[in-house]
Length: 302
Image (cartoon, rainbow, N blue to C red):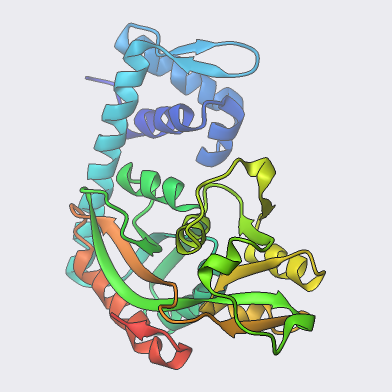
């Protein structure tokens, strides 16, 4: 259609994703009035309304919903064409939008950022931390290029690249040091502290302890591993954390960290990206670099 531009599609996709003119304008780095003008221009070009407006939020019309789906696909295809062109010149250069789950980001990202910056100076790495569900949705929709999560993810559109495995360890109050290490069935009888709903690590801890998902009000919850460890330090209960978090979270806390009896709980960490991405071989270079660091960090390569 004459007059329809990629700018229209990018602005409209941002508005459809955020559902709010102010947040969408901020994401697009333009003013809210400018975004409103662009949306009215787009509706005029199409000859039909795309948005139902009210004072607090926006709602897409049926045409708007359909256009949002098609716009995401078009924008994703255009981005992948750009990615393909980049691979001809330099394996890893330009923008790379990387998602990482919260139980990995603080412990792995510093090493990854430093290593990649030194090896690939032309790479503009843009990390984002969020829960697995959000990262996978952003990957599929083209808002992320790559993510580091716990495997498997079970999404047919995504390639899974295993990196390493790590154990979970038990964190208990300092006064419990020297006591027998409880078995999983005993953990069910203790005051177990867990992350909030939405974190895959929470689900893994519940599965290891053979605990059914309980209503949030019946569980002791924290927003981060740091919060959980500090709650244990205060004598509120016990928790499980991944081995990579021990040095950062438990180093200065009044807690006792012990390995659990065999078979110990583990998780597999990996990278995921769209199967259609032309940067697959470049992403494998990142995976190889992480695997090289795994033995130094006490992780078992896969």
